[in-house]
Image 1 (cartoon, rainbow, N blue to C red):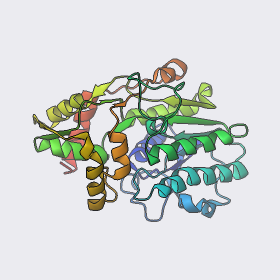
Image 2 (spheres, one colour; image 1 turned 60 degrees about the horizontal axis):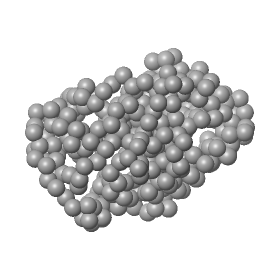
Image 3 (tube, one colour; image 1 turned 135 degrees about the horizontal axis):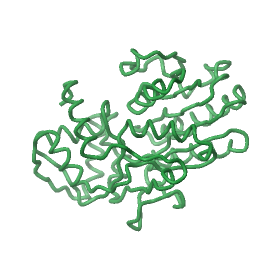
Amino acid sequence: MKALVTGAAGFIGSHLTEALLQRGYQVTCLVRTSSNLRWISHLDVKYLYADLGNINACAGRLYGYDYIFHLAGLTKAVREADFFTVNYGGTLSLLQLAEKENPGLRRFILLSSLAAAGPSFDGAPVDETTLPRPVSAYGKSKLKAEEAVHAFGDRMPFTILRPPAVYGPRDTDFLMMFRMISKGIFPSWGKSSYSMLYAADLAAGIISAAEHDAAAGKTFFLSDHMVYTNEDIARVIGGSVGKRALKISIPRSLLPVIGFIGQKIDKKGIINRDRIIDFSYTNWTCDSGRAERELGVRSKTMLREGIQWTADWYRTHQWL
């Protein structure tokens, strides 16, 4: 089987690329010329150099793939329009070129996000029947990307996957929380609930959904089937780094200010004005029962062991 993976150099993309190779796939990684290939440079893969904003640079080279795994996207941006240019516009351009050059494509897999569905407003985990209500520009742009995929559904088989918060080795977003807790600090703006998923389990779930006939034309949530509070997560991280962190309460009214300051300090950091919108909602949980019932997809890694493996990796690579 031949697979094209966009975003292969990233956190999740590199885990998926490894998993595909382990299953015997021939993998081509679509990357930018400026991409840092440190996580995949040692792998037996081919490279296709292009930017989602100029996907036509790949013209004549998208034929012959059995699967296209579209993971590339923008998760952080200063300008709201950039989310839509990359996440929606880039997806649409890729779909158009794939339709033109690869009519035999077995599946186009879009890695979307729980953010495209939005938070739970009634306390119950959202599922595939929940009307999407994204609250951030990122979430809205991912929903637009989903709509683009659906528009090609009558002529291109597809599957859309919506993971929640993803963690694991190579992740830089949760690293901030690990570092704060390792210093004995746990910032909190009230009790919140989250679904979680370990990166290796997400990679396995993506492949299972791609290969399963029952997943064609459908959207699925993926998670480890549990719900965790922010205090649960902080406690487990504390155990993994040998610290009992002091909770520092922050008024929710200050979140926009924190987002503004965070974005000024680090434009590519997780603390920015758009992400803070998501943080201001208290229930980011999803029900992944459909993926288990219809596809047999179930996470193997629970939070405690996944967090410990992540902490060990951070220490080994001197990130902690």
